[in-house]
Amino acid sequence: MALQPAAGVRDLNPGEVARNRRLCELLAEVYRLWGYQEVDPPVIERQDTLAAGGAIAARDVVRLATDEPLGLRPELTASIARAACTRLADQPRPLRLWACGATFRTSLGDSGSQRISEALQSGVELLGDASAAADSELLHLLLSAAATLGLQAQHHPTLLIGHHGLLDALLAEVPSPQRLAARKALTGFDPLALEALELPEPQRRQLAGLLGLRGEPQAVLASLQQWLGPVPLLQNLAAMLTSLAPSAARHGVRLQVDPTFQPHFDLYDGLVLRLVCQGSDAPVAIASGGRYDGLVARFSPEPEQAAGTGFGFDIGAIRELLGSGDSPADIASPWLVAAGSSQAIGAALARMGELHQLGQAAELCSQPCASQAAAEVLAAERGCRGAIWLAG
Image 1 (cartoon, helix red, strand yellow):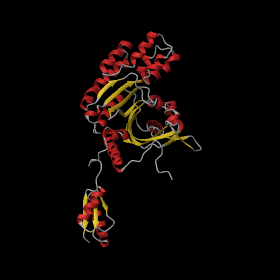
Image 2: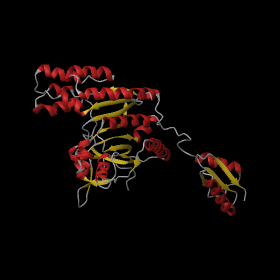
Image 3: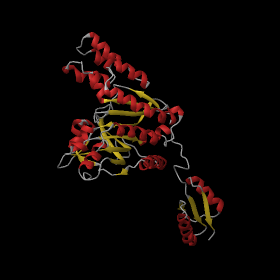
Image 4: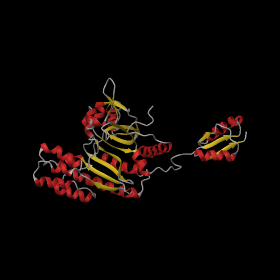
């Protein structure tokens, strides 16, 4: 009998489960305040849905051995976009939806064997609105949600913002045969791959300069304007960041523009974002997302509905970032209700019922306990808040 969980997954103890639930509840409360409604997409989907038109590589999807091509969802967006364009197609736009649930990815371990990782994701999707106002709403909502998590100054939260169109514009002068390789080198921050491209030396140096072009929004946008000129995309980004700056400052989040940033999944064709915090050893990404109009268009026969933008929080990453200390807000320790004799067990159960009606957790000591002092010792051993002893 196997005594360990599968490679890549882990058992969660009660404290970790309680902290996960608390984090999800904090985020859900913010989503509801902003008018978002909860949905529950299936864990199992058809592989063509999960692949999102090639945006998610087959190597990332956990495939199931079934008669039809099915797999486990590696993220929530594609499933929600599909549902929005089918079962929810008759609902007025924009649709504001949120969901929380497990996601699964597969990868190859160091030995070449398959590893499956499970994560808990909580996030929102805003569908049917292609406006810049929708992107702005998404960013403000992200900051409001992050503000409830208990991030501290030492976490140095930084919101990375990029745009798929920026990279397209910056690569427009690169010859078509080299463009995809140049994009991969820039988004992968790979100077060696960039150096290997067959490009004129001035163009190669110019692209290499992009690898270091990230930081304070005004300075980066000014550099991009020298490169691209006063294009509408830069003007729209500048306006959006100007409106976001006061909220970011209020919540202690630093804004950073990174024109070469792209999330792991190639879902996005507009705004892209990632919220990164400093962990004890390395930076930790706790949220990511962006605009994915093309993905919605694959599911929607109505062109005017083909718009979507959203983000997802990685609950496990946030829990580990904040530490493992249990607090009263996370775990409500129960009372231990004990009886002095087996005949008093019924009275102990009745006392537990009274506590439950008051909303207080209580658990039963199933064996007779000789005294209040003995009951207190047992309560301390079990991590209870205290003991209630009935002499019987």
